Image (cartoon, rainbow, N blue to C red; front, side, top):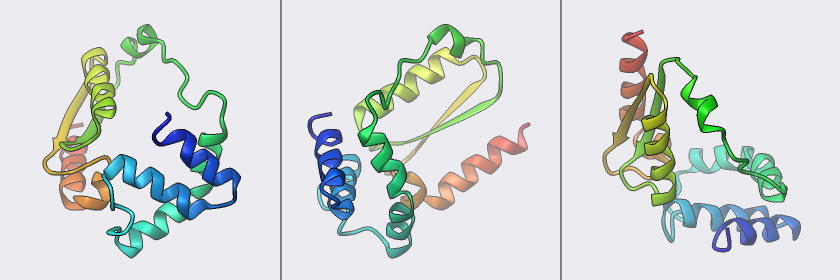
Length: 134
């Protein structure tokens, strides 16, 4: 929260969305990630800037999830994560896959949290394979 969330929120409050996105990207994908972002991925992030602004302004952006309610979700669910995803995010996916009875967890090799931008073919193939089983 102190490394990414608060600084990004502060940048949004100062009407500096590019700074907020840089802070977020550098945290999620590694220092310098914002400079190496392909133009299409940058456009997508900029189009989502209102969501990031709302999240960083929220008093409770990540409310607690009732594990018992999650355990009762008996629906086929695909959980995709990147091999280089930040540890807290990987821990969430691991816990969800442990708790959800019908979850399938797939790790995309070499990818970070931005796996759909980094490895779109692998993510797409994984998703299609999951859907074909249903």
